[in-house]
Image (tube, rainbow, N blue to C red):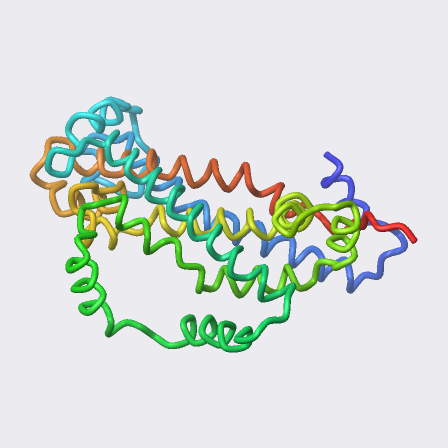
Length: 296
């Protein structure tokens, strides 16, 4: 309601120039159109998941004449990859996406913090490695990487395979480096004067101020990992995630009863977790942590 009042005030206020009101209206309409453009694929998928197979092939653009939710119940039994059901693939997606990014963000923070806050021999060299790693394409290194992982016995071994997530020399480390560098060192100095150790200062002073950055990196990374199927396809074939299951099932929809609407229903169900995560983390990502606590 307050947003609507603000819009009316800006649009019809006597103090606003005519050209400014026109520009504001144009941008408002563009944002509405862009929002509808982004929401349309989700709505189209949901609408087609409620159709029968005959109705879907009769017209993919029409709204369902009768809502049929029976395919959603069949997803949990008929939708599977090998011996893995939809629920098992969802659980694999959860620990692959959420668990891997916890390790990656933690490792990135451990790399970025000393680089940003301390001076030591080799600091610039380590920083150069991070920049080199994220700028040089490694497309041709896929075969060598697979051979290395297979030689180390990490294939279909989540415990060993998780070691590659705990690296820290990635874009997250570079982003956190800049964020840590921008935090006033006076907070750390005050903590040292009160007897805090370096680890306590990191955990209780620096990390809380860096939470907007950490949460933003974590949410975006989890959403990216949730839609990634390459790791399950190459390295963890016994632990298929939802992205890999959808990738394989799209070629089998013609051979499964109710396959196409059920495929769309599986897409809708698989999107619930990343949408919920973004809705929860959105406020934290936009929280302003710039209010200082130092007093002269």
